[in-house]
Image (cartoon, rainbow, N blue to C red; front, side, top):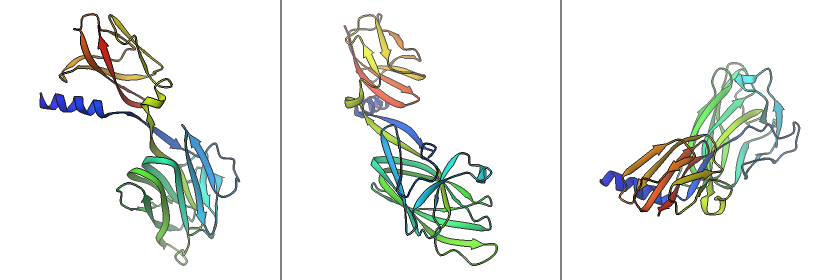
Length: 250
């Protein structure tokens, strides 16, 4: 019972939808000026590089397995900064170095939240798919830690560093976005409860006020006709995230 009640209170505390967002930089025109920005699902990331600027490039014969556009710093760049229009959870970023004869280490340092810097090392293909797992981040900065060239002299700047597929989780407020997201009606309900504006439902679970699981489905029409009168909590999981709703049975 304690576990069920804990789950219930957790559902009640949920007041946001967490949606995974990928900045793939495909919508930025090739050759755009420094201070590039891309907006996805209402969240904007702006990318700039100190002492060099940043531009886009088409992958060089599928550089390191990438495709389409990537961001690439200009030769004199010393740091690169990604700035978000609102706090986000940063999941991962592909980091690369366009010098094929080097293994490069970068330090990625976040601003916002209680997070720690991450060190990323490119592989023999010149890329590193870097897991970050930061929360409440407003920006992060990438600096060169060290380079280990197989030929020549180690780099002193970040020239021709490459970035692609920045994956974050943005948070959308349910109170402000309920009409744009999921509606449950009629509520109060007597018989059938309908879910509107929702696609690709993974699961819908119904709990009573004691935190007991009453019903599970993956349909957008839910039969309440045999349930007792009272307050219920609907927990919906789909491709855009998870939400809870209070449902009253008449």
